[in-house]
Figure: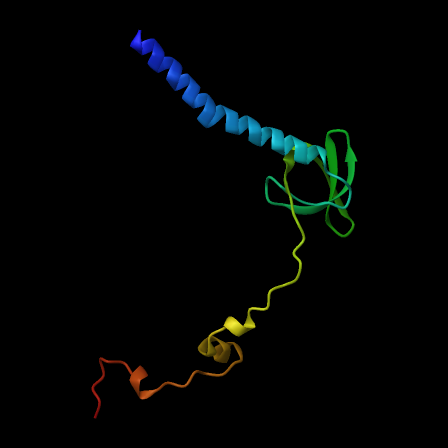
Length: 121
């Protein structure tokens, strides 16, 4: 009798831990794919970034470059990409040594930068 109860508990645990979340993710993906509209920026499941040009029943026409259009099934759309507001300026975070080498300057070595293996005279 206790083996049957353990078996039932395992099935219930598998349902709540594995099956139910997977079904929820699938429903969300189908909802997202059905809400696509021309002009939406998307990423396919293979990582291709494109813009939706047209939707034809189960197919989606994507523009991957100006004038280059390809036809995909809706199931291949992985997610909708939101546009980035503004590029972040990270030039303030660059180390002075890195900045000097990028500009073409050679960083100046101090006496403390000498190799420890060579004896000083």
